[in-house]
Length: 177
Image 1 (cartoon, rainbow, N blue to C red):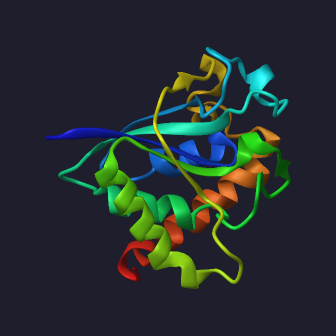
Image 2 (image 1 turned 180 degrees about the vertical axis):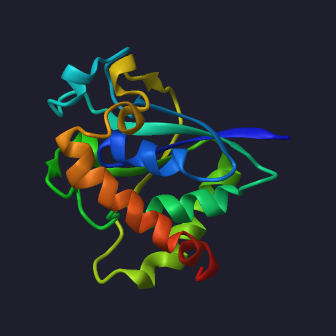
């Protein structure tokens, strides 16, 4: 088994975490922050939009069971990569669409995925591609949020329908591209 990591942002990390925890080949998902200018930020700071950090997940995966290409397709197809600093009702730079790549090979794969899915959207893709620098884990209350709080209003109104849609179309995400 070869384990690798990729750091992704696509709106509220509670949603993206739930999607990737439900994905075969994913070993671990951590919610956190990346891309900003404040060291060791807290959620209360990041949610103001003044830290430069995006809410992200760090995905550890088994390369023998799922490829980076497949993970990035799932990422791009389970959030709206055409809205600037917004996902649904969540607005602010902390909710931007972003991929943090670890090396040039990962950057090229991300660029190809973006190019391949461009035709799926009427508006231009605004997903940022940035070199990975550092990941700060969010507080424990934000880890496994959906699993720990399935009855919470946000989970019921946003995450449960998004997860159901993902589960229903999972094979289509990968087979059509």
